[in-house]
Length: 279
Image (cartoon, rainbow, N blue to C red; front, side):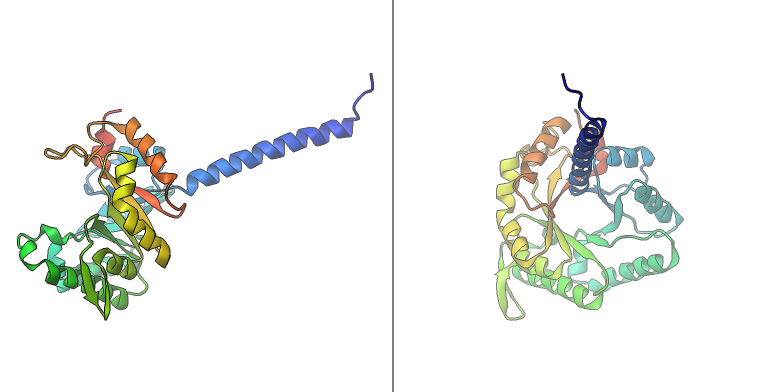
């Protein structure tokens, strides 16, 4: 029996190693390309929650704070060490009619960005007009003012990445700057990115609730995240994964990912409830 030349054996081994390395590289890149955000409403939580976030593939954190200080700087440092971006999270429906309150907070944000070494990657604003007790009585006016606020922020702060949380029902057609569109379309136009609060407990419901916004975001080249809920809901059990638990939620999230563009993501509300969600 003829012996295989040594050089051919070496080439074969190198070929197998190269294929394996390419497989590992592609798998790693595939995981890194999956955007997974999480709302972080409680800034008192310790680093075990950061480790949990990292272990579960979080790539960006929406971190609430009203006091920009060394604690904020340290949190961002620890998150960045774990390869997670941090966005400043805050929200108040009163900003819609009194935007000067928001501008005061943005001034603090900008001061922090100038002062500290570890910086936010942008702002993540949770402005929910329906939280106003008189929303239904002045719905059209409030939505117009909401759109105006997002437009003015885009013009006033062109160098800041500003993204918004929006509910799934912002379908009201509003005329703004001679263009009549659904409210969500105006917000997407004015935003760097949008996270849709598509709080449903199956992949089908999540996607179906977001179809119009997904289609529009694609058409204008904007990033869109689809939000899922993990907290206990006392009235509508189809809103949250609280009853189903982590494993089922992860399976449904992966099904959603198969239906959306690769540059779109998922966002989980919020870190404390997710951490404590049953397996």
